[in-house]
Length: 159
Image 1: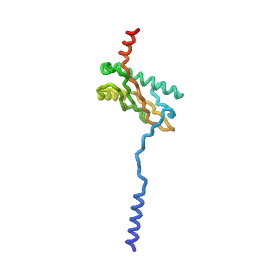
Image 2: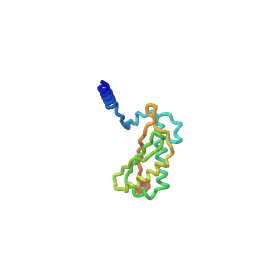
Image 3: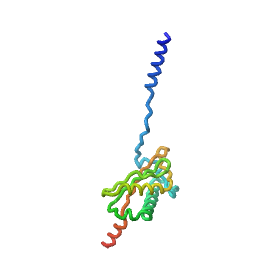
Image 4: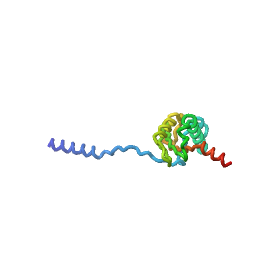
């Protein structure tokens, strides 16, 4: 009788253990840009509370910072760019910026540009993260990189 009870108890414990809900990894939720409650706030943009001004300030500050670093630190590496190069940054939930992708239709030494943009991402100051439903979320930001020297010299010739 004791063995029968013991077997029933072990069987019930086994079934209980097998029926436990499995833990799953959280899936990154894609949030539409229009759904964001607060856009990331670059240093100097803290006083903007309207969404369109928050985004405009972020775009202005990020683009100017990246352009400045390219012009000062990497002018030779970008002199051969003949078309728009898109770089994707992610501002994570802690406010740290990471380079996450490059898109360029011409053949380039992708590793060189990935290294450059990783270096630039490390130099971007800490940013207050985007907020969605009262929680910080990752924010993907794409910047177009254009060889302005070539486009300026072409426009001077035609004028």
